[in-house]
Length: 181
Image (cartoon, rainbow, N blue to C red; front, side):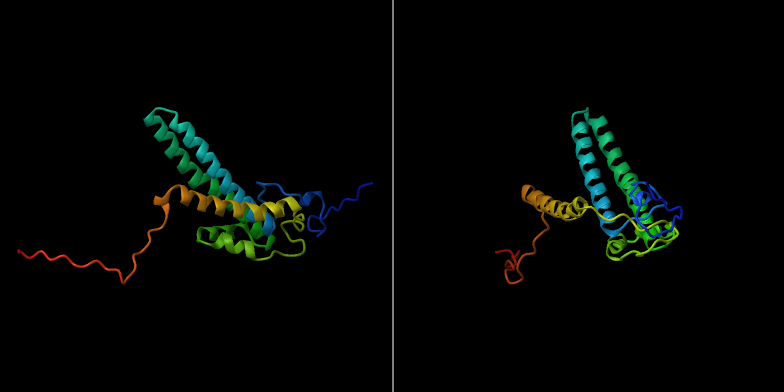
């Protein structure tokens, strides 16, 4: 026997509260929002690496066209689309309209959405989001650590990518004289 609650704002967690990645009418919690955006960023990066490898194997002009076009599409369309969809769902957790997602155009707003807790009860956008499984919590911890580790590893491989170090202020070289001797 299965009990069903016909009210969309019941507050109970049932099968309708299970996450659907691209649904614009659902809610998403903080951990899931953070993990989905980081996973999308990682996926876009891996996709670009694969495209660059394929473009390297193509003739020079075609390879450059494919790599530049792919970079523009992923950076300007695919990743922002994921951020907007997830931000709309995150704002639904606050009982705010999806139009507020235009705020993600302001730098650091998506990061702020991670720290603000959502409503603890059902609202007009649906029931409380499903609880996060342990695996999702683990990914939310491991993925940022792996990305930071990869960043520092890449700095070690390519020393030119390191930020420029400023010379010490007391070690100024002597000025050269250009007077005729």
